[in-house]
Amino acid sequence: MKAIVSVSKTYIHRGNHWHRSKTKKRWHIYYYDEDGNFKTEKVNWLQAMYYKSQKRHRLRRVCLKCGNMWIYFVKSRREKLKCPNCFNEEDEDDEEESEDE
Image 1 (cartoon, one colour):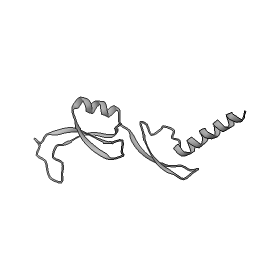
Image 2 (tube, rainbow, N blue to C red):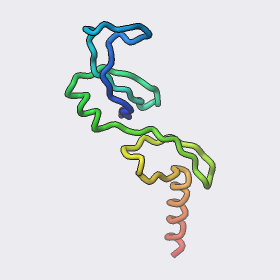
Image 3 (cartoon, rainbow, N blue to C red):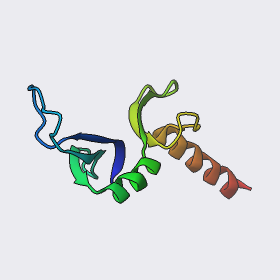
Image 4 (cartoon, rainbow, N blue to C red):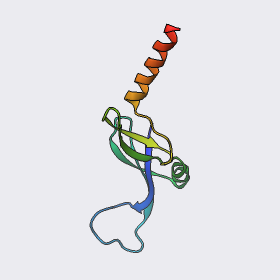
């Protein structure tokens, strides 16, 4: 799964030099792959418009209870995030309580 971070139109030959006005630009996507590596890929116009709707925000959060830090890829910054460690512990506690009844 690709976590798309950015979609932009950039020069084919990027670098620290001036480009002529006739230099071609192409659509590129910037994403994180499944291993967490940051990558770039050249795409066509139709794919670029699709990926623009699939962009994610990369958020780094620290849990106030356990102090662990984790990274989330979310569609909206307003989403409610739960710590994966604390969330799993709460589920286990709920299962133990239901077995006691």
